[in-house]
Length: 101
Image 1 (tube, rainbow, N blue to C red):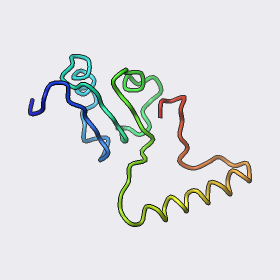
Image 2 (image 1 turned 180 degrees about the vertical axis):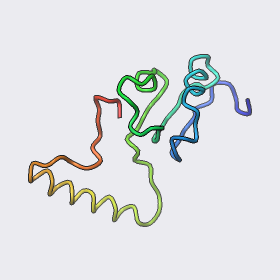
Image 3 (image 1 turned 90 degrees about the vertical axis):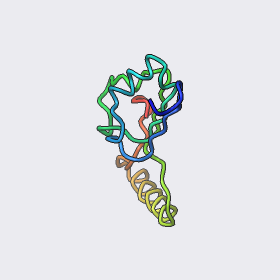
Image 4 (image 1 turned 90 degrees about the horizontal axis):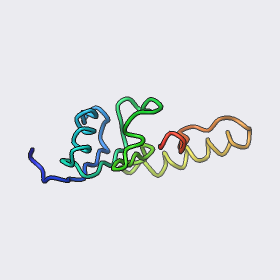
């Protein structure tokens, strides 16, 4: 392994970059100490997936972003969701805490 034992893995790229089965095995035996995942494969993971309940995994709702266009994108999404909320419609890009996400 090319990293120190107990490394903290962070994935904000694409879910397919990591072999999630190998990640789980490495978390369980301590080669990886913690994993912060902003993306998974698939996205969303199926209900009950082992990554959701793992004590050393944090899954965020695919919020990492960069670039100059992002503030406009977030403002647009907020305004669209405000209109949807006021109309009683489902929101776009909702955080789903019951799925650990």
